[in-house]
Length: 362
Image (tube, rainbow, N blue to C red):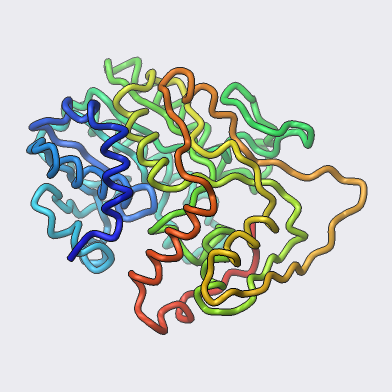
């Protein structure tokens, strides 16, 4: 069966073709391989490995190999991939050597204890990173990539339209609601410590918002929520007033940027990954509605607050563009159309309604 992502994978390879040679005959270790980032990294790795004859291997750490086989059978059956069962915080180190590592895992959110959820998040994220870096330091890894997040910046000033990497952020570390973003900040610091102690290059990619195949259709992702509404043929519901500005990069561009940062980025120097083109949440909803078939209406539940400037959460990507020559190739509407088409191809009739509808859009 033809891979529905073949055109995107050809695009990724065309932009990264000269970078893959350092993986020839080598092994790469990946955490978070079942997530949005992980699936795109594995799709593009397998495509490059097969097309260029790299004879490379990718090991994927996963708590549930069977679930991954069910989600991505074509990847699980690829001879160049090895599913390695374990959890980031305590997996047994395999004896093999690895040249590269990507830590795309966030945390295991399976805890049922609401009172200790923040404690669990902190321990899981920090413990998982440290355990993974200990493994990397002792098994030959020379280049590692941490997929971080733009969430570490907190809320920028209302008059700041794009966030550069040197923005120190606005986040109260004593507020328990900031556990996630504060922990993500500490993770970047830990990477810097390990890089300096173990002669290992650790690259940092701060991701913003994305669209594309494998994007969860339920959860705190506005684009996924809107696409889920459209696939079900129901009105797209904007829970707020639709005024905040976001930006969305298509996943094929994201993969190009992540691989380029891993292979060519400066160690311990964070790079924003995302689109610089702002769009309001309402405009995003309208874009999804326009790309759906049949067409669906957009409903805005909230009312704007008079006298307030709109909130922006948009990256400044000058560092990646100037230092690494990276650019955004896909426009938002094209990315949304591709995402809708892939979901229609991938999901069976009746599946859409089985997905949980979130209570809010962020």
